[in-house]
Length: 325
Length: 252
Image (cartoon, rainbow over all chains, first blue to last red; front, side):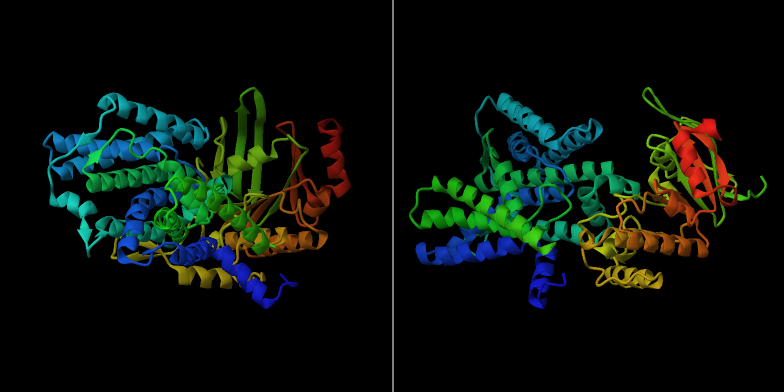
């Protein structure tokens, strides 16, 4: 610390206490670039488009952030997303009120999260493996039950409009839910004793255990929260399309994890926050819209995200190492 | 039941892990305001005994008395609630969290929001952590700093300060000076002496007999899961203890 100038050491403190800093810089940079290259990038329609995509992904990513800070991982969120959306679609078509269908969809997600958590904690296996398994399991069940066909709901309801309807022109209510989720989860993490326990569990499981924190309970709870947020996102997307196919949510887990990691959350746990994830998903939404508006074929999206992901993690790692010197 | 002279009394403690008999019928006591050095070579059973004392492991057999009352400690939380505070060499603090948050981890002061939800009382956390550490002579630049920036000695100091603040009756130190410089080791030993003056009892586990000899009142020596014996400081020299640890029970 001594040989660093005052400016340097206050910058170091900024990086240490704000994992999201790198993502914010990247977000601003990419925004500026697209302002020049993409026509009509600076318009309400464009912003609404970005937010619509970012919100659904963001609710899933919020759950992943929570779980990753706990030191665990969930690859099955895409399948959970699909299972919940399908549950809502099937119950709606069966004439069950949407409110009850929504409850059942979340209950399904709750169950998936509980299974993930219990298997991981009880058998002490990496959650990467547990959730890789359950990801395939639930996707397979989804395909088997539907025979591979999409399910469409023809009715309309105020319930679905509330989940993901329009307001102020092109904007969608999913954006409101997204910000509510970000706010609530961030408050839990940064302002409550439970958040403290979560960071401690992810930071050093054994230390947390000897300090009297029931790390197993914390882990299982956060698996459940992560799955339920994925389920919520699934219902919200169903409300936008009024239909769901059995492959819905495929690949979403990786996109969500990418957004979380770009946002500065450490894969090893114990460090990160929701603001970073917010920047991460906005970045991805922006790249998606921006590339199309710049006239690039949509295929380039994945390639771009790949580069951004690696750049972001390299930068974040370097910054963190420097800040801790 | 009559009031016991011991703060901690463990009788006939046995613990087996699979085929390994880690502890065999061990008696262990700690008096009030007493510093006990728990010594023995690797694999002697020191850590197992400590983990039983602090609720991490539950013994297969044996009795446990705390202030003369029979107790069953089945979780670290219960041990902590009773006033048994442990400072592990590598597990004292969470690296990526701030000093203040580490200080209150597991026992955070809260403010009720809307009478239902517990919110961290951040102001109190920062203020109390700073004052409590200062009070026992630990000066920290800022309690918002991450623990990973601290030296090994500073970490031990914070963990000891935390124990004192929360009114621990027994402080268990697991190799507190193992990775420290000579200067820092001395500081930690001073904190231990200070803790005893404040009325705490201490169990001190170490390989460095000279460190523990300077502060302990009594030594309990373990070998292969069995107790070699208890030795008061005036009966033995540091060299004697080293000899007993090295040569085993035969030479006693």
